[in-house]
Image (cartoon, rainbow, N blue to C red):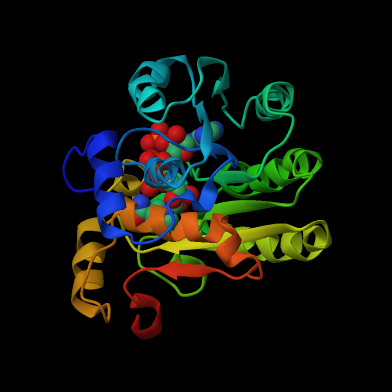
Length: 277
Ligand code: 0WD
């Protein structure tokens, strides 16, 4: 989303751009992890979920960030009791968030995981130099927290459900400066395949979504990111950079019943970059 687009303007735009039923997610309950600000990919997804009829619950990282994301929770119509603290490195917070969901909704249809982190020194160094602690931290926050999310969501997805996580092309090919996040995202994508196989019989689908480079706060921690975006815009078959709106609409499709027989595969939303990259 290039400029500050209000939620109301977004909803009007979507209804103008997308013909056909907006109720693709009518009545669905969605939990969104990873909204840090109005440039977050998770915010683009939450707007789309809402536009297509879902009710959204949302987590914030900690008391410091709470005031920045409060207006976004209001814009999304998140009930105050479903605006929840969740730092996945703090024992019990992720589980507590699911307990509140169980208490207020009694079920869950969609769980979006859009969080990642690696300590700066490890992210800015070669993989060969990556520290044990840094690797474990990056894996815990960026990968294992999704596995835990699946474990806590499973009993709530009584009518089936959809688990979505954000990955990146650096999982599949070496992308300069992506460094330790490459193996971490590869682990995330492999974990998603196993979760899809284990949970498929319960009607629970699992989708790694792989956006092209988007200027967000987490991305600003990646070295050479501006060059990465320029290269993507030049080389992607569609010669276009991706916005959080684009990711949101495609993710809403995956969350909907239109995608009911798709699971386990990484879906690229990158203007086709990965086929030429
Ligand atoms: O180009 C990009 N921006 C791409 C991002 C391309 C492809 C994939 N992605 C992925 C990222 O790897 C990440 O998994 O998308 C996901 C979301 O990242 P984002 O939207 O680009 O970045 P951001 O808006 O920063 O959201 C990441 C959030 C954190 O935000 P900040 O800016 O405060 O680090 O992850 C959250 C936090 O809100 N987060 C945590 N949440 C719970 N517990 C934790 C944690 N320990 N650490 C970070």
